Structure formats: structure tokens, C-alpha cells
Length: 217
Picture 1 (cartoon, rainbow, N blue to C red):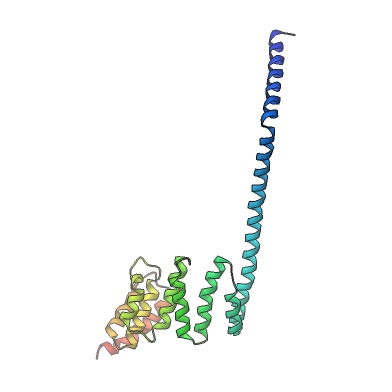
Picture 2 (cartoon, rainbow, N blue to C red; picture 1 turned 90 degrees about the vertical axis):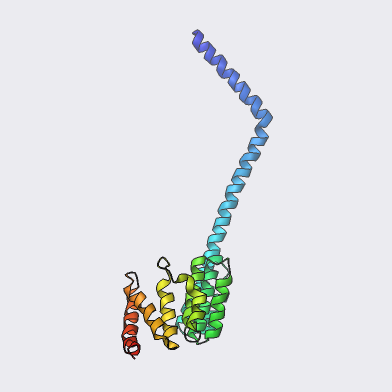
């Protein structure tokens, strides 16, 4: 046996002896640590599975409510949507409940439901903005333009996603109250905006044509 082989063998035996001493001293801790890691991974996977099942169950209830509303079974739809208890679907369910009330012609209750969504800071900000717009359309038949502007005026900016809807609401309210200049201004703003949705642009064009003879008087 060469000196190098002898030294290597002795070194290997020394290392094995060191490993044995370390295991004798810390082996139980190592086993416990492995158990904690395995238990932690199992807990995480179990929670993810539970969350997935909760989400799937909520989705079934939510879409059942949507179907009932589409079938005209409004009371059943409201009950189903109110039963949704998953955080994400619950927020959508709140919006849909307000929408169902609006379809029933219960504008006052629908506005209150939309306003409740707006006031709930736990709801996603995009859904809250949508609720503000939905309530605005319902209120266009009753509130004065300045009252609607106090509600939705923050959307009347060129960088706001909901600017077209807000301007249409202001224009409709202005037309209803006889302020044809204001109505014309907002409708022309939508008509001139290249990003205005096509159906809304067509409505703006129709309103402008309707307003033209009124402005000439």
C-alpha cells in the first residue's frame, strides 16, 4: 500500500468516526428537523388543496346564481349569490346582486348595493370603480349633473379607463335636465376620443345629432 493510499484510508476512517460522533450527538435533532419540514410541506399542500376546493365550491354557487338571474329567477339568484363565501367570488357576487336588483327595476336598492361595494375597502379597487359607474348609470335618471360629477368627477380625465362611461353619464343627465350645452360637450368628448368603445361612440353621435337643433334655438 502506498503512503498516499494509507493516508487516504486513515482519513476516511477518521471522517467516518467524526460522522458517527456527530450523528450520536445531533441525530435526534436532524430527525426532528426532517419531520418538521415534511409536516410543514404537508400542511402547505393541504391548505392549498383546501383553498382550491373552497374556490371550486364558490365558483359553482356563483355561476348557479348567474344562471338563475339569466333565467329570470331573480329571488333565487340573489339567495345563491349571497351564499358565496369565497373572498374573490364573494366580491363578484356582491356586484352581481346589485345588478340583479337593477334588472328587477329596484334602482334605489341597486344603488345602495353598488355603494356598499364602493365603501368596502377590502374589495378590489377595479371592482369598486365598476360599482361606481354602474350606480352612476342608474342615477343618471334622477340626479343633477353636478351631483353625478361629485360622484364620478375623478374619472373625467384623459388617462382614466372609465372616462367614456362617466362622460356619457354626465351628458345624459345634462340632456335630461335641459343643459344642452353641457350634454353636447360631453358627447363630443366621447365622439372625438379615439379610444371610445364603438357602441358608445355611436350613441354619442346620435345624441349630438339630437342636440344640434336644440342648440340652434
